[in-house]
Picture: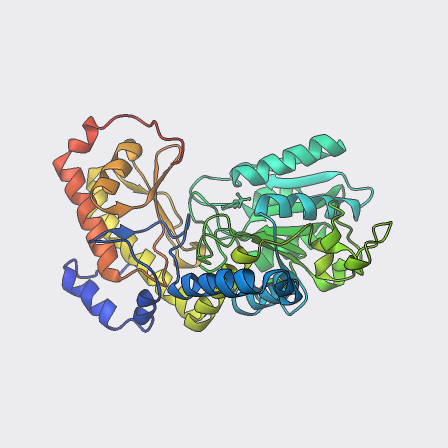
Length: 421
Ligand SMILES: *Cc1c(COP(=O)(O)O)cnc(C)c1O
């Protein structure tokens, strides 16, 4: 956004009045008072429909139906996966499954992919990928005696296609990258990078944790092989809700996942002597699925589907562009700089600002009624989920931040102590 915008609050009020998604704000439980929540990329808010649906599942399906409810519960991970495929990740039915956590799904898919690429012993990821991704890949490389090749990523600009190109070669089995970088919000070019990886015969796995529900995703159209993603961020499915995994149809019969659980077994209730995996995406299931969490994934997905990912993305780009504009005008003079890509097309749903005293400022901001979060080394991360955030929320949050900076009392706050930042 390069054109000058009005800096008064009336402009934000006008944008809110013209917002076609404004009514979705009332579909969520909200914090009291004038609390502003800009942490939808860490834990999304509670949809009222989810609250009601879970209460119903608990009292009717579990409380009254008891074990007979498994008749329809058993299909939920796959049905909900198809719903996610349709509304959020651009996947035709039969390729997306709700299952386990992102960490566990990564472990399953990476091992399966490596087994399917004999003769290739290199995994590529980047040194600013999310910690659990790097750790899982380190563990797998150590267990299997293969090489984990780390490409260097700029903390603010995201994955470099040149660095990836130089690291690729005939020995590479798999490339695993985040679609939106958790720290900076940098958005990777999924189709271009997937093509690059396929050109050298490797498989491509995308981690969608910070993009699912924030940016439109086209897994099928981009030719992606594998994907994982969590549902408690922009999908609003609640703390610890199960994750998703995606395996492209053409690849499914070539992969065998390493956790041989009974929910991936053909004719499960025959309780047969040997593991004989069911064909299709359900092969990637493990044990008994988490039903309440899966129900929450379905409700969260339906709500975003109703709003529409194209409209959500359009609003998100305007929200984050406005936030950056106000930060340039009001906060840059106080020592803030932008730690996210400036171009709209290169940004996901959140914006990161850096300041040497970011930790104390983030604490002062919480005390002033604005929830964002702190990220190392000196970053303030603001994630305005488009489905609930108003333009006046952005104006108010930035106004409170400039007041904190002008006032300066944040500098006497204590240094970091909390385990969760
Ligand atoms: C949030 C996030 C995770 C979380 O993984 P869990 O197994 O749900 O704890 C993983 N990867 C990325 C990129 C994330 O942003």
